[in-house]
Image 1 (spheres, one colour):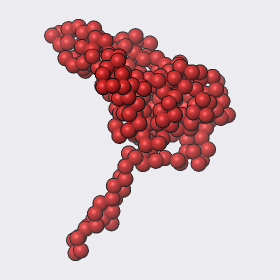
Image 2: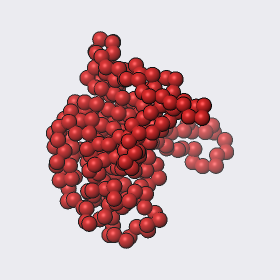
Image 3: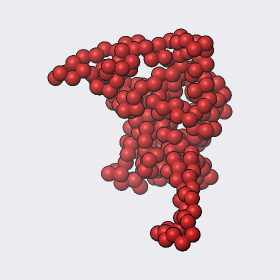
Length: 272
């Protein structure tokens, strides 16, 4: 089945207000920016987002968040996103913060048809006992708190029950993809993308390189096409547009000091 859709706008055209989204990416790496922009242009609002974080700087999910289009976030990291923190503390946004590994497994479980699972992560904390602030009242108080979760003991160890996550849509970005939806992710951009893709009832993948079926070695496929319903081929300009969240440059060495390199390095958590 050829799953290629002509444009990102067409790929998300059936998204509606109140839809839930699982979105891949970590920081600026592997974020489906083109699809997110298409959702923004569509004008949908009151979205429920499941993602590790909710965008960084002015990119990714921050585009929807800053426009007031996101109603609820299920994630594991706020980071340096000041607008995310402001909306959360101001009572404008409901946020369910959970351990990062638990988030990954909840997405995977939902995609594989596993309704729930037990994990030791969070036992003895508010993750299991309840009371985490999901929504503030804007006055410093808690308007909505997380409920307690079931805890059981197996072989002398306590475990908390966590539920799998399923969403209306999933948006992911891959380095390569074929017309059948088989995807390959590049290095750190693999992050949450395969897991988010599994969780979506309708999964849309933007790919930097579109190839014909058979061009990808089956042993190299990171996500089988059975989890993907729509594929959008990026333009060359879109494919190379990748940001760097933080850039650091080392100080020049003292005069006369021997170095093994140029003395300058650039690092960051940009898209790969």
